[in-house]
Image (cartoon, rainbow, N blue to C red):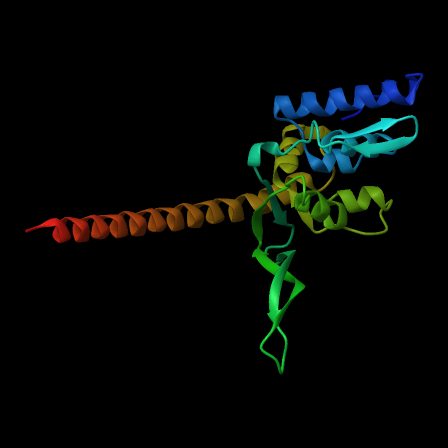
Length: 218
């Protein structure tokens, strides 16, 4: 994502401007991936994340003014577990009953969202980013210099990596081929479920309208 000439730019402020331009251009072109950003070396990774979060830096002090925050237009990131039987789990806050009482308290629990999931990355909750930083493949391998291995892959990045052909990271094509079959089945199941929900909603609406018409009959 970031070209070698970044280090030759004479000031940190100018470097931040160039990093921001690169990130926003990639988003505009539809080629941005969190995997590539999170795998980038410092300080480019931090500068890029600052650009996404609307952080500005005056001197050496970062400040957040809420302007220029990237929200992806409400679109999620599709993440996939590298193992066919693996499960993606996300932290959620729920009200949990306190044993021996009639009260509940907020508690953070891990919710299983499946083998494949569309994960949102809201400005106030960068869940997709957090998952890929903690468990991303090959983000973890890159950041840890091979000392840890991720088990969740960003589907958009994997597709791009396959398109690179011989330049792709070892294991990418094999992983893509393994996931492609799962992805087809997942998308078919989701389309079927969506059709069933639409049919149920249409039937409910029809019944409601019939009840209203009957009520207005003399």
